[in-house]
Image (cartoon, rainbow, N blue to C red):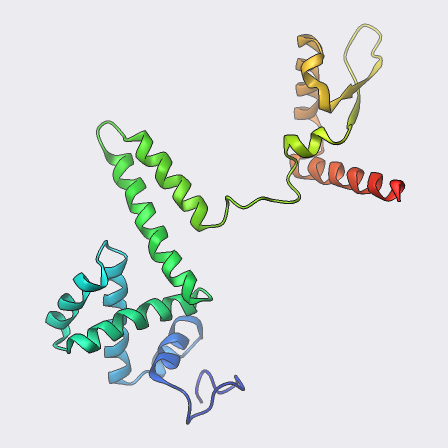
Length: 217
């Protein structure tokens, strides 16, 4: 049975070579179903993808594919575009296929910069920024506790400091710069020794802010 037969979008009459090759990457047992011509096509697609992620443009990759596999230039162009689409499909979309190739470029630039003598820190930082953008890590997080978010709210932390009388103190988290150095050091120590992790503390702060919003309605 075809690895895609259970998918209502496919049937024996519409299943293509690319469908079978795609399934071989993501479905158990699909590799064994590939015919010799399917396997040759898969080899050509992997070769095209390898060239594209190793700094080759389409124009540079095409003659190399022609020479290696003895196919026409038109077929070589198709293999390149199919490779982008195929590996994009494996990781969800066509755009993701392009993004994957660009991410590989950025990673290799970082590795080259890191292995330079001395390391090229500027190029490394640029590569890191590019990788962050490609992974979407530069997008704003609506739940992030940014200074702007904290500035609009007042959060008070009540802790018992190890003083002479062990008295409880309330610390305004929005004005940490206004407390004295000794108290600040004790706050840091109290947080580090707390059973509440950073993520849990972040969640508590968010719950507190949401509770404040409800009270205002």
